[in-house]
Length: 268
Image 1 (cartoon, rainbow, N blue to C red):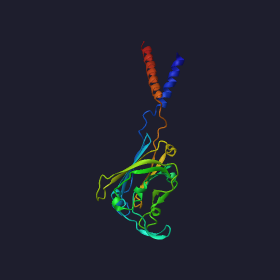
Image 2 (tube, one colour):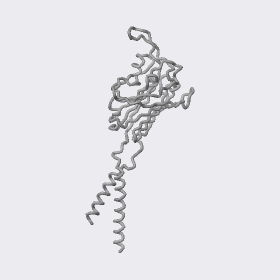
Image 3 (cartoon, rainbow, N blue to C red):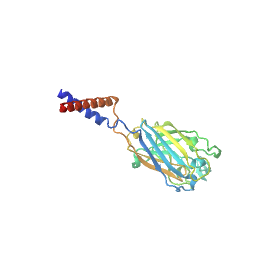
Image 4 (tube, one colour):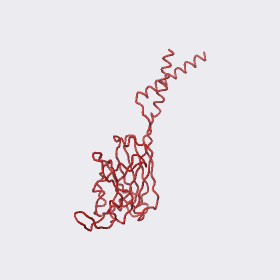
């Protein structure tokens, strides 16, 4: 009988330790990356307020970016320059549009290696009157390089130096994902922040599953303002099987019975 009691005690302790994460957090990441106010080159139309980052335990990452620029997407030109295609021609450097979401799966220790790449229609439009037409499609993909605003806009003197777009894409790594725009405060105002939302699932991507930190960066294509930061991943060490929870309950019941018997023996 003593042997059986000892076995149950061992099982009880094992169940307690293995169930320490039974009530694991719903989010691996749930934080905000703030951007400094009144720091946008060119004024408040380019201002970014903050980036909300959520990574749910089901693998879904949601990024919400609050910026004034939504109302002015594709409205402003970056000038023209001589460009060589088949011959030298005077061509537009392109209007300022929404940038890609850049992601680093090794925090601040490595270059950006993933990006949410907007569709060509959404990030390369030239027509001002179509600026409110969103395809709302994109691809989460592995990348091996990025483009700066200077590179994207043919070295225009009207843009800054920051990284804004995915460069070379690793073939075969893309997955179709969704993004959206909530023009909740349309109109001219210095704090008239609309929301750009990116949503994608990383459950099957090893680089994310092994990450302890993630770096994020977003800007409009001219890089007049950039919101960027590194977030820590709060990952539980283990989640018990349902049988472990049942074992824990049985162990508690047995230990309670033993205590009750000891109390009765003592009172007798």
